[in-house]
Length: 586
Image (cartoon, rainbow, N blue to C red; front, side, top):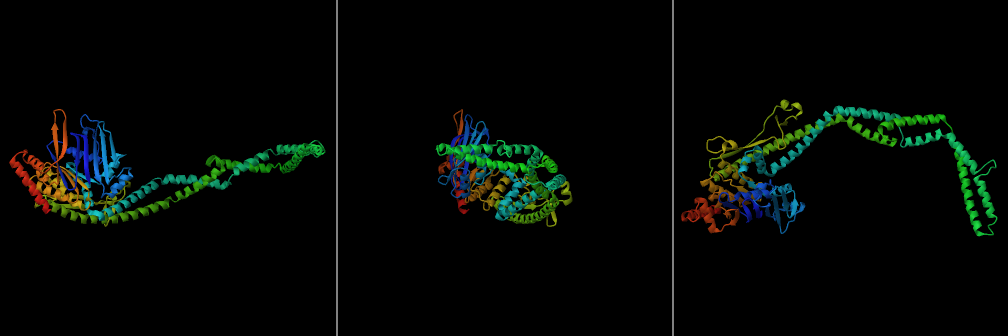
């Protein structure tokens, strides 16, 4: 729960700290004192939209901090640490800064985080209800979400399974539409690939063949030149006609030095080195002679090689720089062609998958509708019972779960998916099912149930929302509830009952209520007043937790506008005693 809220330079509040505890905390004060700023501060802590106009006049920025007791919020604590924040002594500090220029920064456990991260972390902690929430309750989506919350794990599990199948079906339909739409392009691509692969297959190149043939063609084209050079080299190394050659010269030099070896060791070393040279020259001469005999002039082979190279060049002009790249292209294209040639089979496979998913989705939609219908009956009973305790004894609430049936032929025209068959009916399926949920209210005996936006006044809407929240608190608990003048338009006995129900809700959750009704404030475990002071130029507000005597004076002010009237004080004291007795019976 929230243990503390610190507010600085926000609206009319200069600097205030609100210490909170379990149970019911009411916040009261004169009109314009700044009660709304507390709700605004909570909204900022929950990641709400920042408004630079809320920054106190003359201040550079506004700051709001909240201390959260995370001892029973293991998932929240883990999320804080995952975001880089620190949980210290089982406490987490949430903070939000808003500059006068409109810039906003958020902090979780001391770590700077995006505002969206603050919102996702804090959202499960606090449920804020105000006059705007009454209008939100009028929307069909909000009413369906409320019913799903009340349905608990059964509805949540079915909804999760339904949404999973719905996402898979949407993916299959997108792929099917793409495959069918691009069938002509895919056929054209397949023809081009098939033509190219046939060209490669006819030539049947071997890896590296282009480089091998290029070398062979060069050798054949210059065979005469190569043979002449080899003969000249052979003659120079080892002549058969007695002319000077390298081998003979080296042998003569070696013999000359061998003759004087015994007179000088260095001459012997030189003779040994010349012996090595003669051996090497002898080997080279033999290799050159062999090379010369292997060089042949073969015009037919040259023509064959040139023709083959031309065929390979035709492939490299289209499919790759080298034959190795051509072969790689052919391998990739073969795989792609298999995919393209399987288009018809893929279409049939996707269509079969779509029908199977539609059937599965239809079954889940039926189960979800049945679970919602069952939960709707229970929710209507509980809310009706709560309204009876909120001074609306003759009111009846019903929760209608219905579906809109569509004509399959008309709905599926223009490429849109056909309506989902559920049983023998065809319904439009959305991401949350096929159901439309609507809360109906019959405020008086004999009146027909009407939609909330047609059949409920502002005060009745306040009580319906409170009754709904009390009914939902057992199935989807939230640690902290904040109600901002949801008792507007209510008075007398109804106000007393609203206070009683808020006190009951506070038995299982922390409840903060901004109210102008003394009947509601009398039920508080903790009463905070927003006090306004002015020095003629600057207006500021502070938060004060009231003791028993101060509570009596504040209630008398709320009752009669007077704090020192004995009659008003007696009435306030009587109201507190009645509330204490009522709480004891809750």
